[in-house]
Amino acid sequence: MEFITIKQNFYAFAVFALVSVVLVFKKRGIIFVLIVAAIVGLNDFICHNFLKEFFARDRPCHVLSDLAHIENCSNSFSFPSNHASNLFTAATFITLVFRKTPATIGIIYTFAMLVCYSRVYIGAHYPFDVLAGAMFGSLMGFLGYKAYLKAINFAEIREPALEQ
Image 1 (tube, rainbow, N blue to C red):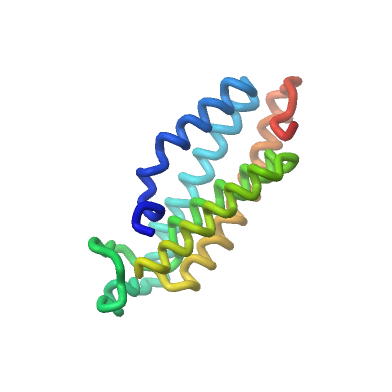
Image 2: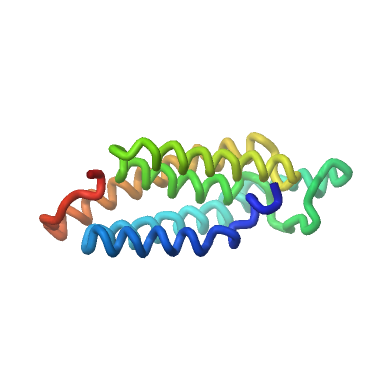
């Protein structure tokens, strides 16, 4: 569970996937990468700097330290889970863009839910923290998709759609 919860373990795969999208889909791929980076970054900023500070809920690894399976418990607040929110932002956005690729949808949501479970398992979050993060992230992913559609229309791109 600790391996799954450490986001740095998946950076190489993410970079490979984003570069592949750009190479295959050219201009649409560039817009895709820019929007996914912007929407996940905005989501992370809002969750960390506003929502966590507003709700100020202590992490379970501080409150229930004898039950936690984590060596370094973060000093930031618990609610909502940034891991869950960021992953569901990306997952929602990606699955809306690639909605005709069921394997991608299954893999990305399975991974997102596994990371959410790991956050609860190690004691970094309560279950409602990851649920709220997933819900907020899904909303942000949907807004990112709307921005993507506007950007594609604005650029009047006539290349094959990503969803093929």
